[in-house]
Image (cartoon, rainbow, N blue to C red; front, side, top):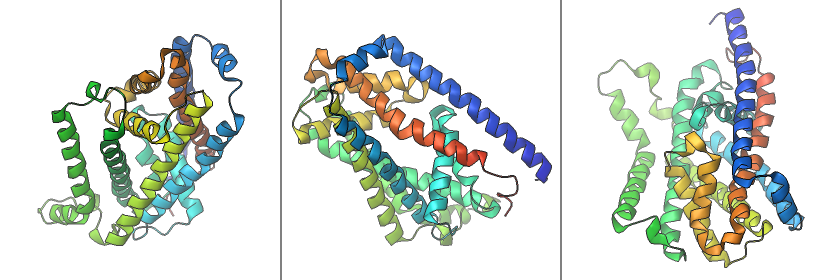
Length: 320
């Protein structure tokens, strides 16, 4: 693409992201205020919370995204040579664009903007592969921990739905493990799509896939720990194992809910209220606010950092 044209498009993208990020933040805050009534109510009620717990959650946020950057670097190992710092820059830049798009669909495109021109198509496939690995961890952990959930599990699952979600997890594992074979099969279908399919030599090898999967599990564990610490911060006490089971169920339901991209904060808070209903109606505001605080810490702050990376993205970089 002609550099002056690309420069204008890049400038329009930077301005557009700023506008849409502002709108997203405004809508999220408005939806939370509609439920809570006033942030003063929340702050007044939980101002006596253990600040060390909140600070720990904030300090875990960089680890959360560092693990995602490590995973992204592992995925790109045979396709693009990037440093950990470059991988983090790509991840946060993609997060910023995803933050400003419905269902974060722009996150994949945002990541590959920081790759060289010939690496972007490969990057889209590899980003999707990493997403599959993270989803598998979310599904399998929730399905395993459900037996330890002490709430009303039948509200969420019947025997049929449990088998159905287990089958979906099995299919995703098959896609993840057999990704190379699927790509190779597509290559041999005789279709003129070679420019749009990643060569099998650029996909992660078996050991790399296992490392990606393990990294995904560690990142999931960090997120669960953050959720647990925030529950403690708002005054919710309970058995660690039982609360972990409930958290894994919340994360699973969030991942499969078709409404999350549309209403986000309301649905996230509503799912948390359903799962933690047995902890008492007097904790409603606290339970609702935990996903909101996680959104602000794990998504809003990193997305703002990522936007500064996008601002520093120059028109000549992608053409390198």
